[in-house]
Image (tube, rainbow, N blue to C red; front, side):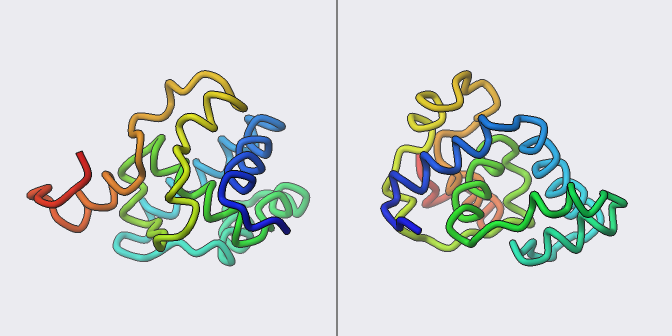
Length: 137
């Protein structure tokens, strides 16, 4: 798999654009995890198990089996759409953070209205430091 951060961002946006309902199910699953597991970290490898626990069919659960590179971008987009998800999703800094994810979203997905933040790190910083000192502007 290509590790170029721009290609990874484009692949994630194509995944979202190909099936917006699937994207919605992923974000809803992240929301469910956050609300039922306060303070715990959501890991990519656990998504399939949590989807099963939610009663999703095996076919639906399978759509959450993706490699870490895809999750790396999808998790950032989820936080950009719903900043409170930073409580459960805690990405590590990586090459993908050099990409202007909002621009890639606008180019490949379209309407960026769900992206309430331009940078996922704003939400993560506010979770770690409610005073917001040192958070990206």
